[in-house]
Image 1 (spheres, rainbow, N blue to C red):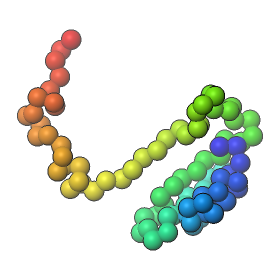
Image 2: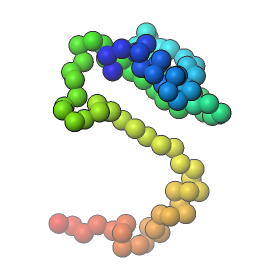
Image 3: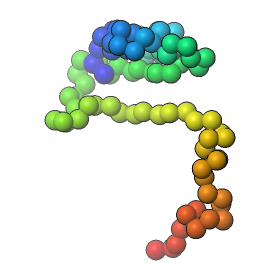
Length: 89
């Protein structure tokens, strides 16, 4: 993002995030209300020279969601399942 202060303010006001740490003057880490995680959102500013996203795009670079090991394995097919095997093309 171009402006870290503006982004932090947006996430605080729009979603109730709490800023918990700053690093190197260009990274901010925020925690969601009620969360026990160290941080739920990391923001990195690349400065005012950052290119604009393509028309119709949001500019979001990365989004990740943590899942518990149980929720991941409860739906995963066993390793011997055909969906786990790959043919040599």
